[in-house]
Length: 223
Image 1 (cartoon, rainbow, N blue to C red):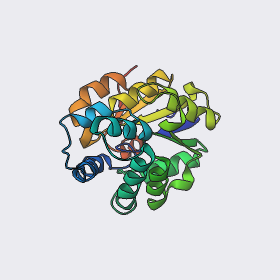
Image 2: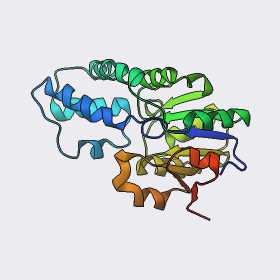
Image 3: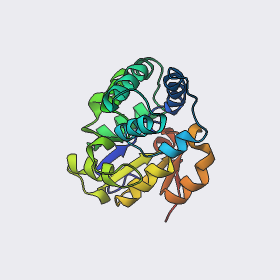
């Protein structure tokens, strides 16, 4: 899996950390302040949206009496404490990152989340300094499943796409990595369990945990 690779680029939520669950809860609390309920299928509609794009969507769809900046600031405030205190790394992440650093590989994050929450979460879990760059979808013209965020992350760590390996937990993210010309590894996550078949069809590799890589028990899906 790591042969001929010079860099690894990770998605954050659901890939490095178990955090996808918190956004449903934040949506409930946030919309509840305005007497609104979370519509069915909202998360599916927002897959791949950047933090800013999601705020624009919320303002327009729910006609909120807040600016886009106020919505994002509110979300950052609501989520920060949870990201710092309640969001753990996925099994094997720490050991896998140590292995990558021993091999002198460059590491980056490519996330649709906000930079603040990404940094808060990585810092709280003791791995922020391992990353050479954190790229958010707000930095690029198009969010996932378009390749922009992965191409920009690779550019910022001076790595050609064919020399980068991507880790992602949802189909949109896996497509973004593939469209960037990179090999991609699908990561098991309870949030995207219903999409396992689609994930396997897109990805080059599949893992239940990062220990699968360390132990050589990961699945190779494409020859």
